[in-house]
Image (cartoon, rainbow, N blue to C red):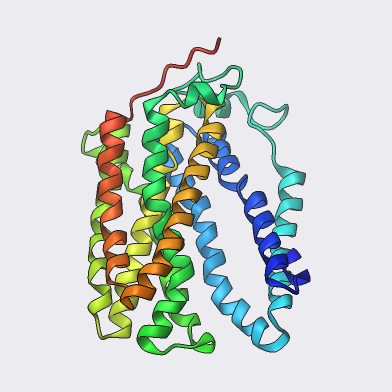
Length: 330
């Protein structure tokens, strides 16, 4: 909401800095919450459901923000979106409890949550120990390679549709709403996807990897979007890729709770968030230069198509089978 107070580029930059500083705690807390409240075989679906909330916001934004901006200006648009965050923080502060807090759950419910990991309790783990683990780097590199793709979709799709199909602020809403509706479906569907692989006889970790492979393959057709002449074909290809990304994220976000004890999950996701944000910043910087030099989105969509398979290969090489980390805190 502080953006509404900005009157210069520098002041707006300060607001963006503090937005990033405040937002950075969101996903580590969310993944830690899932690790605390769900057994391992339910976590990817739970992650997919909460991750779809971001997509619901992305669906509402192109419907609300342009309408508010055109009538009352961009200052009011920032105030409007900020109000939702304030309400959510108040609700969370009032109602959130850990599973082991008194009168939260019954003994049977606690046993269900901790059925496969009763030993995952203990003191917090220092970052220096986590940084020595191959699994930390496997997860972080995968996020470094794939987080920028989602931010590319978030930030550059309006520019792409404007440049390619001459859509302006007043008629960008429908394409973006379709893309983010499909991405919400992909988030929940991707979280569910390991279940059928489990029924085929795969272990939970290999079912997770198989689901990520499916999502990586679904992202491949996005390479052709820059050559299409049809607005609706482009929307379809981008929607599938966005849904595939969210399905990928639902499973990738779950891998820290697969590989690390509960007390380390928040820290690992925090490290990943830092690395993923660095990759996103670098990609945004180079994306602008690439567009300026080539006047084409082809290479950017090519990167978006191939990033997931490359990330999955690195994840497999550094953490084959998503092997559990044995942490001994000194």
